[in-house]
Image 1 (cartoon, each protein chain N blue to C red):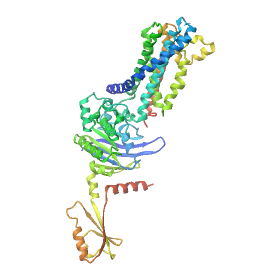
Image 2 (cartoon, each protein chain N blue to C red):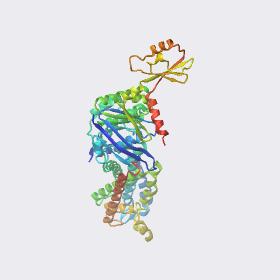
Image 3 (cartoon, helix red, strand yellow):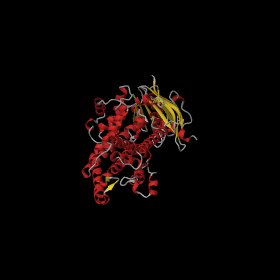
Image 4 (cartoon, rainbow over the protein chains, first blue to last red):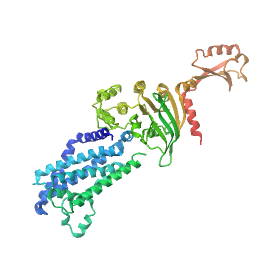
Length: 253
Length: 309
C-alpha cells in the first residue's frame, strides 16, 4: 500500500477546498438559511408538526442530505475529472499507485469536504430550530456513509464525463430530483398510497429515512433496510470503480 | 554496460485498429542518453507512454531495472520519471506544492531539501510559492521536469522537452540533462530537432510508422556525416577521370567531377586537387560542397519507410 501517495492526493485535493474556503463555507450556510426561512418559517407555520416533530426541525435531516449528496457528488466528480481535463492524469497513471490508493485519496478528500459542509449546515440549523438528536452516533455514521457513497458515485461520474456539461448532468438530472422526491421536505406517509409505492423505488428515500431516524427516532422505512440500502449502494460503486480501473475504461487506452 | 530498460516485441494497436507501435525492440543502456528521432505521428509518444504505463501494450513486454512494468509495476515505475510533451499542470496550485505532490505520489517521504535542490538546479527556487498559472511557458516546462525529478528517478523520459522553447532555455535544458547524466541517470528523450540529438545524445534511434529503423552510436553516425563532397563544374565536360588525377577519389558526374573527402582528417586534399586540376588543363567554372547530415540520413530512412507499402 502506497500510503504516501494516498496522503499526497488527499492533501492536494483538500488544498483545492481550502483555496476556496469562503465559498465552500458561505454558500451552504446561505442556502440552508434560505430553506429555513422559506420552508421552516413561511410554510412551516401552516404545517406545524409532522409525525410529532416540529416542521422546521423535521426538514433538517433532508436539508443536510440534499447538500451532502450534491456536494459529495460534485466534489468527487470534479476532483478526478479536472486532472483528466487538464492532462495531469498522466502522473497518476505513471505513478506506482493502484486503483484503491487513487480512489481512497480522491474519494476520501471529497467525502471530507461533504462531511464538513454537512456539519456546517447542522450547526446553522441550531440557530433556527430547536433540535434534539436522538441517536448522535448513528446520525454521524449515516452522514459519513452518505458522504462516502456519494463521493464514490461522483468519482465514477468524473471518470465517465467527457466534458463539463456531462459532469453537471447526473447531479442535476438525477440526484437533485431524487433527493427532492425522496422525502427531504415531507414524510413519505403524507403521500397518496400509489405515490408511496412508487417512492419506494427511489434509493434516496432509504438514506433520508435512516438519517431522520437518527434524529427523531421515526422513519418511513425500517432502519435495517436503510443501512442495507446504503451498504448496497456503496458496494455497487466500489465494484464499478474496480471494473473501471481493471479495464482502463475512459482513463487508460 | 547493462540494460536498464528492455523493450521486447512491443505492439500497440488502438481501438480504431491503428497500429502505433509494430513489435518494437529496444534496449536502453544504464547511464546513457538516447535520443529518439522521428516525424510527427511516428509513435515516439506512444512508445514512451507504453513504457511508463499510461497506455496499455497490445502485445510485448517492457522491463525497467529488471522489473516487468505490468506484473511488478510498483518497482518498475519507482525508477521512472516522465516529462510529458504537453504542459499538463494544475494551474491554481503553487510550484512547491505540485512538486511535493509528485514526490508523494511515488511513495517517497517528504524531503523539502531534495526538492529545493531540484528547483534550484532548474532556476525555479525563487518561484516556489508562485502559482503555476503565473509562470511563463518555459518555466512551466521546467516545473514538469522538477515534478519528474522530485522522486529521484533512475530513468528519465523527456518527451519533446524543447518543443517551442527558446534557444537560451534549450541550452539550459541541455545543461540540466548533462548534469543528470553525470549523476548516473539514464535519459531517453524524443525530439524532432536533429541538432538536439547531435548535441546531447550518446545514441540515436530513428523511429517512423511505429518501427525503430535504426539505433546507432552518435559518433558512428557523425563519422558518416563527416563525409563531404565537392562538386567541380568544368568548362568542357570530360568522359573519364584524367589519369593524372587517379590518386584522388573522383567520379564523373554530369558536366563535372565529384570529389569525396573526410572533413575529420587533417588534410582534405582540396588544395592539391585544385592545383592538379589546373596542371591537367581542366578549366573550372564553379565549385560546390555538400555534407551528408544526420538530417539527410534521417530523411532518407524515413522516406524509404513511408514510401514502402
